[in-house]
Length: 329
Picture 1 (cartoon, rainbow, N blue to C red):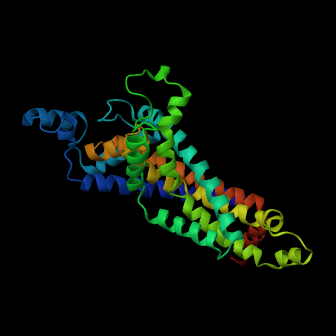
Picture 2 (picture 1 turned 180 degrees about the horizontal axis):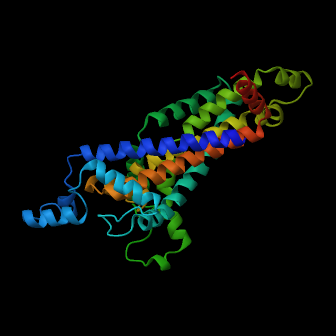
Picture 3 (picture 1 turned 180 degrees about the vertical axis):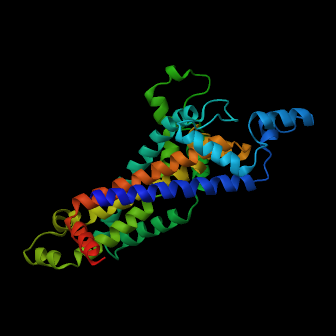
């Protein structure tokens, strides 16, 4: 286990360095003028003012020097100041993440529970009309972009039926301290449903495949020979063998949730971390975008590591297999 954790830490550090370098390179290649974005589109400024603004934010320094200056500050706990929000990057991330984490956790739970249940239903009814119908729905949802689904949800449930608010995380004109829990839930329902669709079909189809394999195994055949009913075989004999792979896949879906939240928060004008990432990218806000990139990479890596550690701890077969591989090496 100790070697496994050390290996994961080395992978994590390598991943963070590669992701940050890639994000910084893409920002440097972007045609967006950060100074013009800072003062506002269409606002005319003199060359001297532009030079002073660029000098203030360190935009005149060579790209390599800017990157290593930023990296050195990060090692000392300083993520810089956001040009877009005029605040410390860590404060912006903290404020936006508190809104995004509620949305992502809600969508994560919905996708996991629905994916597992739908996968069990499909696997238990293999090749029947219910299996074919649910499988068709899963394939369709996999092909539908999250932003397109979000627009449909807004048009149907927010505009035509007026059951839910069109967007935002709270009512307009209401102080943050005066917003009730029910109002927050109503504003989060449609974005959470839209975001949960990102990973739910893959979990359902994966669970279906694992359940079909389990139902064709020797222990399932033996249970049928003893006269056990099919639903008891699914719940008592097969469920333990499919819950661990489903759990691993669920934790691995953190990256999909983070990527999907960027589009979903834009559609619903949800003031979360994804919305801040888009604002940082379109405004050339290097400190904020690099800070969000670094934070999101850590978040996704931790999610994947937790899933792998759970599997490694809960399933003794994986521990034995890794010991054999290590001894062969």
